[in-house]
Amino acid sequence: MSAIFDSILSGGFSVGMFLACLAAAGLCGLIASLIMSRSGEASKGFLISLVVLPMVVCTVILMVNGSVGTGIAVAGAFSLVRFRSVAGKAKDISAIFLVMTAGLACAAGYVLIALLFTMLVSLVMLLLSRLSFGEKALYELHITVPETLEFAGAFDDLFARYTNSYKLTKTRTTNMGSLYKLSYDVALKDPSASKSFIDELRCRNGNLEILLSEKMEGADAL
Image 1 (tube, rainbow, N blue to C red):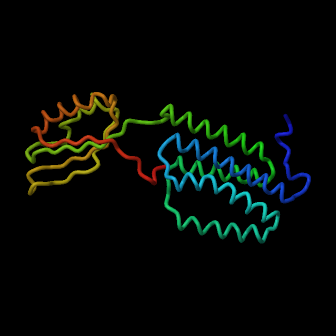
Image 2: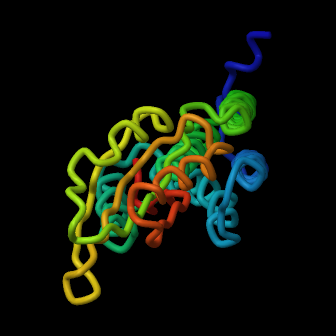
């Protein structure tokens, strides 16, 4: 059992050892990529990057091999990537850190630890995504009201009945100022009761337009 904590590089470095570390890093990336493809939306480019990234990290660390000067140069080169990248979702960033950690472990020769770590963390991510851990039914609600309606507090009792939380995010006029457009972020208690919720709102706003849509998670949401 203790063999899992032994580095395959302890006996020296060779082409065979390098290929073994590189293959293990690629396998870790492939496992993470497969899990990410099943746990949510991910682009093909991102999934390919998850496979390639640990192999790149593994090779870079092996080439540094204790050289302080080379390590500083590599750190500076990688820091430039930060300014060329777009902020991603928290789950995507976690996957990137996962494969980078696996790549570092493979570069140190701990391929069994890297594989075990990747499989365990990937399974945890998949399980939590399937269980909808921390997920809320967030919606955007747009209500059109006549200018004669005092909308402040006009729907509070309905919000209390059908939502867990609500927040007025935007108010604007339309139709030459004769109508108001109210935008809310709401967390519905029961999404299946949305029709009843809308019907009661229609009785308050004079049967004007109402739009209820699922709130999309922003790309930079963390």
